[in-house]
Image (cartoon, rainbow, N blue to C red; front, side, top):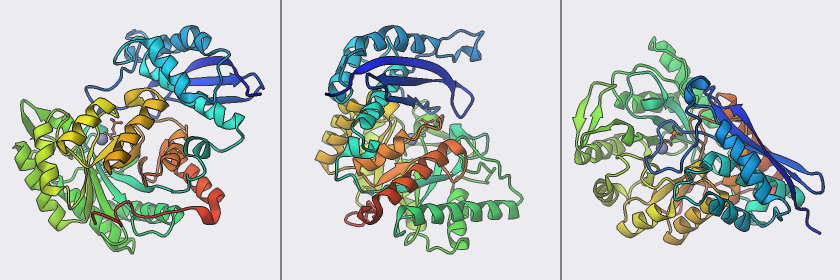
Length: 428
Ligand code: PGA
Ligand code: ZN
């Protein structure tokens, strides 16, 4: 007989920025116990599900999550008692109905997601299989290519760079373990290069360096130099992916490159800028190159650049099937960033990925800039098999925890593990 859920409890813990977040513990009738912790973004999309915070200025500057914790303990927990943890879709439907709002504003997406992920993990334990195999089935053998965010700017760093993330993607590596090594060696080479330029080597929220460069473009230059200095071929072995997170510098209808002092630009100018860079640097993917409501701009950008590179929507879609459906219809991008806490349950995240697959689009499973030591995301990426994960640089333990879990999974899969570029069959 399947075990049932016998207790669901939550705890207020801290994330990697020292801000409170929710951890949920699920206990089953057979004594098995599992926990999961919820991440938190900084450059959040306007249409994301609500992250419930207390707003009590006496605690953590209003960022406490005791209300979300209470919702788990008093409302979600009692409703899940006696339920079969292996019925994830049913559990998540119950959570969505319990909340009853469109944006999960009543109980909080942080409360719901903590419960949803902890139930999935408990179910995997009950089934005596690893989480990736439980969520992805026997075909879950593909390790993702990491997009390693080695240079931070935007809202993730106090420096002169407007664009939030410059990532290296070791597409040419033969395995995940080698890809991670190539990326880490490039990270260390970049440190030496920045030091040599007398620039700071302190890191931003996702573990990338945050130097005061003279321009946004200089970020691409130093990264290409780092790839070469580490002994790899830019483009062939290691490519560049970017997330400008353009919603965060979109002001009054224009893109305001204020941090670097490079002026204001139109949507058209931004796409022209990216096009120029794609001609000069080995860029394979641009996420949120435009702001979240600039649908027209995204359509034009995808028409102009979508055959050459991956165009990813993050703030544009917020992992919400309603927005993704619109994007597919309008050909607004050709890929989607997937963040569990933007939508609030595991099942809705699976639905978002299902839409991407149906459209033949790529998808990138992603962390948030505020993370915890939870490694759910690593298993989730292998389970979904999309071949791409965004989980930070080669330092900061909340990022490395996911990479280390992926190393474990690859070792566990042994010769059945698959590692390949998500672009080799198509665009590049
Ligand atoms: P966030 O940044 O977690 O601060 O939203 C990540 C991203 O924009 O992809
Ligand atoms: Zn993003």
